[in-house]
Length: 309
Image 1 (cartoon, rainbow, N blue to C red):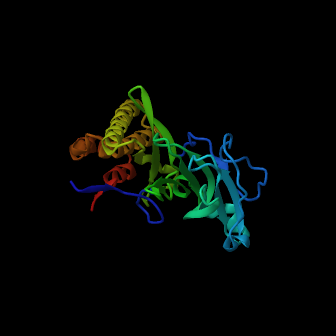
Image 2: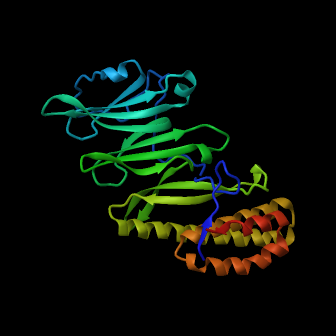
Image 3: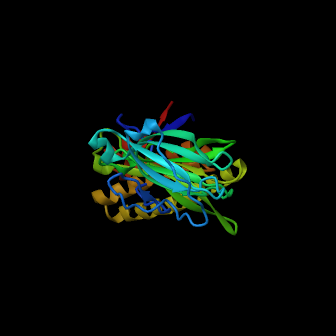
């Protein structure tokens, strides 16, 4: 069955491409109003060469962060550029420019420019465990929904060039740790909301939309991704079973809504798990229960979770 989970953005009955959870990493505020901000990381064991803004940036509103990105003993420079208007500047920075210090020529070289949608914070750390540092940018376009407005970009230098390894404009992403034997691997988890146009916004269901596993190879990443969804599905199925038991003796609206939300979560996780092939059969089996136990609007919403392409 060729299906997709509906997404919600500006268009009704869609998942908002993307958990209202807190980042597992420490981030540093990057608003230009705070002139007493601490550096992204301590710069111990590095040497600082004077950095001067290029002429094309002098007239703009900027902040400068110094850190040894290349791990060569000298601090490079991260320059965040803010919009000219006061409202935009208050929301966050609109660009990041990276200047790396050339130890041979003793000059700074502009190595990367990144457009940013209302950047709120920066963090620099080794996310994938390969000994090099990645740049993590947290963004926030504002609005009533954190899932709809908060995103994340992660930049990694490969073959002399910076590239996006994570690029979410929304989904309120969080960095989590996935157990991997005796160690653990970082992953970026991004969420969505399911709320058809005929349901009120208060009945939106938060669901896992995707996960990017920052492992050293594709095979390991896929193994850990599938394990995450399989384990999450098992927990969701138990919650769904508990909610159904409650609904047997308590046919209240809150009890029905709880069973509905757990059903949506199970469907979403199953579509991403190793049991995705059995999704159609599962929906067919559960549909009789939904008709018997849930209000008509929830029956319709569960029927609309997946639509044909």
